Image 1 (tube, helix red, strand yellow):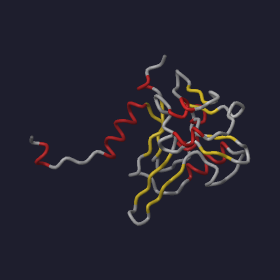
Image 2 (cartoon, helix red, strand yellow):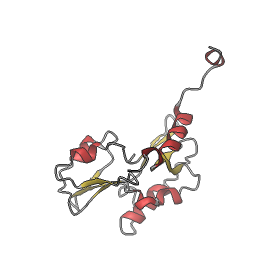
Image 3 (tube, rainbow, N blue to C red):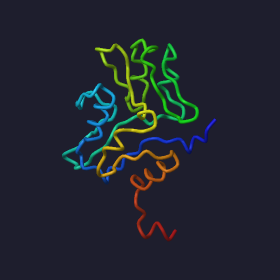
Image 4 (cartoon, one colour):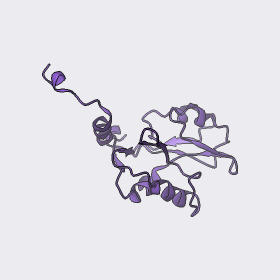
Length: 164
C-alpha cells in the first residue's frame, strides 16, 4: 500500500484565483463529451460577491471516503496506490446515497444518465489544473496540500502571541 501522505490530490489557493472558471470549462469539456457547461463539471466555484471571496468545491479523494463506505452496491472504488476514488458508472444504481453522505456534497446525480458522477482526477492528469492560468489549483501530495492550506487559512499570529 502506498504512503497516503504521498498520494496526490487537488488543492485550491483562493489568494490566486481570479474567478475566470476556466477549470470548470476544462473539466466539462474533458469529462462530458466536449461540452462547455458550468452545470456539467466536477469542480464548482462559490463566489461571494458581497465579501469579495472565492472558494472552490471539488472532491478531496478522502483517505477514508464516506461515499465508498455508504454505497450499497460497492460501485465506488479507491485505488490503494494513487488514492483516487472513482464511481463505476456500470455498477452505480443511482440511489444517490454518496451524494447525501459526502460532507462536501461532491458526487452529483445526473438524471439523464441515472447515476452519480464525481471527479476522478482525470486519472492522475487533471484538466482543471492544466487550464488554471493563475495556478490557483494544484495537483500535489496530501503532505504538500496540508502545508498550503495551513498557510492560507491559519490565523496570522500577532507579535504578542509569538513571544509567549
